[in-house]
Amino acid sequence: MAQAERKDSGLFITFEGPEGAGKTTQITLLEQRLATQGRTVTRTREPGGDSVGERVRELLLNGSPGVEAELLLFAAARAQNVQTVVRPALEAGHVVLCDRFIDSTVAYQGFARGLNRDFINRINVFATGGLMPDRTYLLDLPVADGLLRRHQDTEQNRLDRESLSFHEKVRDGFLSLVQDNTQRIILIDASRSVDAVSRDLWESIQQLL
Ligand code: TYD
Image (cartoon, rainbow, N blue to C red; front, side, top):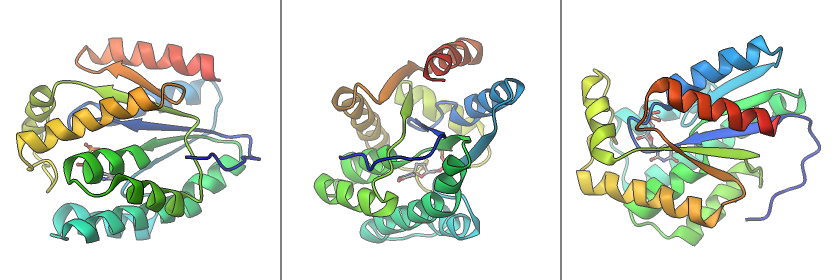
């Protein structure tokens, strides 16, 4: 996927992974550490971002869209998030931390649901206008471990309740994306302690900054 030329001074970092990988906890820790360094951070998530994206999120996680509508709704939320949250923050020189982005669509709707991956790539480019993350962290852990963590939460959404084989395909999809994007995506073993994972992330991000 060709990266559209960027003229902003921000840094765009995305976090991906199967269910229960601990992205939310890690993003919160990172956000705090970056703030103590004096960086301005904008945190966002997909689906979500602004009020339109959050309403689409509601439809996606609690509604029952078909497979095609699901893909288009994720893309709609992305287009909105990029336009109203991510780009303006990058232009203002912020570090943008985004919980899930294009790779989730490839893993979930492509690898797991089986939709055409070339088509998904084109939809992603349309939704983002070609904006690519400067860095993506894949927080990886065995599916059973992630689902166990998730089942201990009270909040389970429609996608969490998919079969084990669906989640295995999602994880395989993410791992294959790492292989194909070695410059952009860094694999982090998220089966370890919160501290160990956050240490690795911090070290890696320091190099990027
Ligand atoms: P969320 O509660 O944010 O899950 P998590 O905490 O694991 O990130 O719900 C987002 C769900 O939507 C999650 O199951 C992944 C899925 N998803 C897709 O299927 N495609 C996408 O493009 C995106 C962004 C998310």
